[in-house]
Image: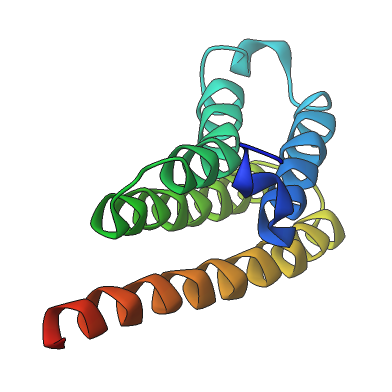
Length: 127
């Protein structure tokens, strides 16, 4: 038996790949950004799979929902940081577009997971 249910979620694996992609992209940023946008971008990216894992490890559906909401917010932060990186010339428009496709896919899956958990909470409240 796998005590780590989150490992069964495709969105968890896709978000880990997004982290690897963010780390790879950020290697081309200038060194003066090590404690600026690089740090902010990497922390936001790591937050996504981390909050999926933490949320799915919670016993309460309300707590799960809270952590999925945090993951969704962090994903939006990743997109914002990448847009800023493109504006500053650290990544190309093509690189931004590729990341946006991945981020949109993860976002849709997280919203689906959120909706499933939310419906479960509402059905418990009604029953």
